[in-house]
Image 1 (cartoon, one colour):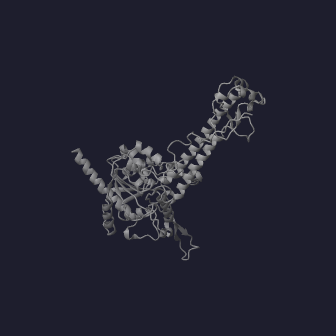
Image 2 (cartoon, helix red, strand yellow):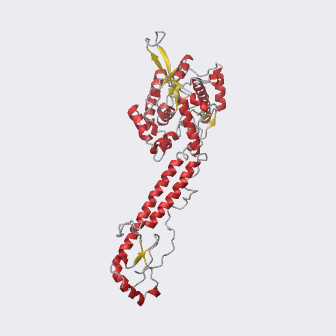
Length: 503
């Protein structure tokens, strides 16, 4: 058998995953506090390079055109120097066995690019069919290698999306050039809150106050109850909107529009809105979609801890390629919302960054609407793990109660601990401050007066009182009253400014 000298082993020149995807540039090191993730990303890159190299080297032996045994190595065409193709070569060829598979090829070392075969009539006559077959095998092997590379490229892209998560989405409202700037009203809010704690109340009774609850509020009997009771004691007309909180934003916006019109027609008073969490998003959507019908009936809107720009909790839970994909959290959430509490999955989907961008691109809040937005930061100290929230009442029958009368016992849940855990997750993963569910930047409504208190308050505090809460700095009902009082002042200022412009 004619053997050609073994060529030196060369690395494949086929690009594996595209230029720029080096170990350093493959996945950004966004987790300075979690180096293990960066190590894992580097290991993935190195493994991918090795495996795609294997695709390039061994693809011929696995191609359909190779008819040899499974364990045999790839065959390499021999490049005969023209000076050596002579009479002596012809004599050697005469002694080659008739098996054409061995006529123009030899065992090689796994790598090799096929060398061009020089013109030789005798070789061409005996092995022309094999040359075509090997050429076809090489073409097919190249396709298989490229297919393998694209598979690993998709794995790397998915890993990158998973690691990045919502890092590029948080605070997008502040980076959008089409959004108006915000005004800081924290100092004035604290002054109003201090006056309220000392018994000075300035909310007018010439308006009706409508509180809009957030997600899962239908399953919390005490949601906003303390605030409504406090307002009623001051002689103010206050309602809690009876909407299906687990419905989509657009459906709730329609229901709120009808609710506001019903209140206005019955009282002939304008309505001041305060929405908590998703309730603020629903209320803002109602004003954006139906402002022509509501402009004479609504005096302003306050959003408390509302994911106006979206929330990473919803996006990371539902978006493809995010953490929720790996443990089927999306499916479990869908069962909980749709099957257990008979809600609509769009209620949570509407709070993702993608949906909020789509909605706000088409429907902006009217510029003439007075808006106040309020956000807080949850405490992540170890002491918060002992915080229990009062969410409902349980009545014991007279036979069980020691006094012989019905006794009401508080139903408590560790909401503070859950909010602290979520806030810690968002802090570690994204470096963002949040109340446990909504980041501070996503809660700031463009064009609004923003309240940024330093007091540590989680997302549930506004509607569910904590058993060990410090009321010296004001309770939830007083904070709501201060927000609405500030909103009245903002509305008067905006009305004056619009009057000056019209003149």
